[in-house]
Length: 504
Image (cartoon, rainbow, N blue to C red; front, top):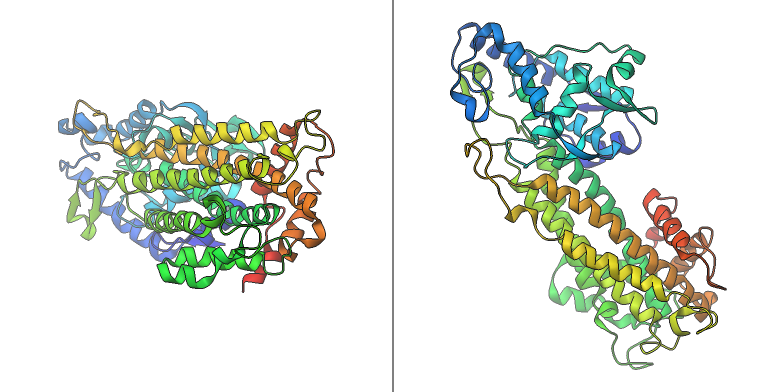
């Protein structure tokens, strides 16, 4: 059971909730803060004080006073009018993350919602009821308004959900689990949708996949290094200590461990004096990606525990302040950095693929073909990798450099962070396919060189990989191989535990 406090949610905890379906609950202390914050809202309504979003309209309508008899209608109208997202839904795991993160943010006790709202969110998570949330339509400031409105619909028994492997009516799923819809009262609709949880949830899922893939890319690069009889000297610790980046040092250490007992790697001067950059600079390039991943993780961990709605209630309601914590700029930048860093893993991987298949750059059979000329071998797999890399370059254009005013220029600068997070996730899917192609080519090259000469670590990878896709003895529909290895890498049936222990 992961206990949410609004302050202390960690990546390992959230990962367990998302990947292992661990249950969640709210801490008693945090719920007490929620109750105190709610009393402040009720006092504001009773006294008819003018406070944004509680007794006023929203956005450009912030100067329109709302009578206390209309506060429930105000919140319901807000959810209805803002639930206008379009496009394919977010992956179900992202929807689950969104619900968890929204509950955690409200538990900070600055939002003025009743405990029942948080209880309802936690019930959805624990019952495996995940709102169907369209991906497109958020500007990434004023909160992820459209996506989170689709989440809020489910709390009141409307909209659609993913439930037990099916897309179905929300009320049907709630009824199946004995959950009753709630009625939103003062401030609650606004508190549910004014936040960065769509971009953050998408960012968290993207990061978890990126982190795993960054480790996999090193093993696959080690395989390629053997297939090309690469020079191990370039990974000597002294070189990397001399520069000083810890992430670069760490990549070099793992590469040395993966290749420790290999008979396929060479020393400088044995075959050539130095390798091309795509081999020699693996620690420098992959290490720089790890630097970015560390930055992204830090920002996401802050945002996972942030109060991002507006207004926020302090000092038992004595201080209610309209601010801009809903602005997604920190996550927008982080997602754009993630896009660039992961795209580079594919860029350098594709160059290694080229070196594996190009007969002008190695002494292997052209395109790793079993019968060059009659059979094309891996020729078009490199085309596919090049296509994916090129597509990534378009997707990697920073979303955060754009802004379009909204709400009659009241909201005149926005982050576009949700677009950035969505594109980061798309890039990561493309990178995985490029790495799958490198893995296929690397395994082929190593077997041509001699499986018995491979290192202990890479040989384990090869043996596991050959359970997924066989040696290329003749041309076949390689799309099937690419997708099979891609799925293997994503689902983690091979976790690297039996090889990563070598680095300890």
